[in-house]
Amino acid sequence: MYDFAYHKPSSVADAVALLGDSEAKALAGGQTFIPVLKQRLNKPSAVVDLSGLGLSGITVTATTVTIGATTTHITVANSAEVKKAIPGLANLASWIGDVAVRYRGTIGGSLANNDPTACYPSAALALGATIKTNTREIAADDFFQGMFTTALEPGEIIVSVSFPIPQASAYEKFRNPASRYAMVGVFVAKTASGVRVAVTGASQGGVFRHTAFETALSANFSAGALDGIATPADGLNSDIHGSAAYRAHLVGVMAKRAVAAAA
Image (cartoon, rainbow, N blue to C red; front, side, top):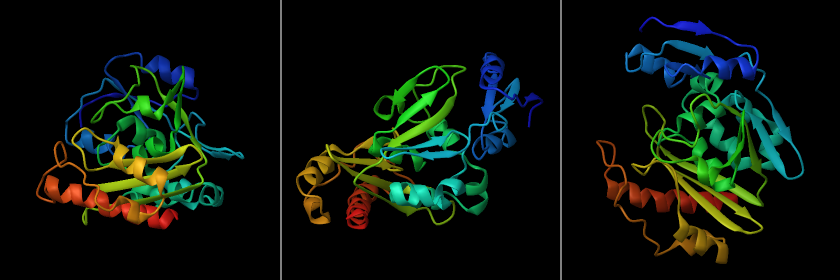
């Protein structure tokens, strides 16, 4: 690692002030950031630890599930309230990485990083979540802007994420056997206004909504409704683990599994 200053502020205002340095970086769970530092792929002037800001916790109302930014994956996965309100979200959290990652990784860190193979972006997009920062609220449809890119401005940090409670939801993921990241993950959410489907892991540009699936499922919420709907391979990832055409096929398979699980 390179030399850097370490700060652990006790308030959001102090954290934002410290992040005013353009070379300072925020540290949430560190499950991506620490390996990047070890590999000398980033050289921050300072690391601002967000764990002392009191941003963890889960609040459930009749219509929403709100999760603090530094809430760990294991907390979401084990929450009885989340399991009851949005079972697909709890299930998603239970599949992230391995046990060590789930005990350290945070929902805010995952969304802010926007790794194209991360699971949480698909839940946020499919459920129509609202990402609250220290300055504003951002709709999930506007938040994700491409691989490792979001609507966050310099010095802006996520405070919490609010998920509308759907009528039904499920997440299915085809996992890389070594790292367990999503080669393809599909989150399906049925709401009073229709069905939203978000795909992660498959595209070079990161998470995206599958509008053809949404249209079919809004008319008939069953796995059979997706028969004959192909996912174009253009723009999908192709690597040693699977070609673009293979991932396109997996999108359909995972979507059908998610619909069956939700139904």
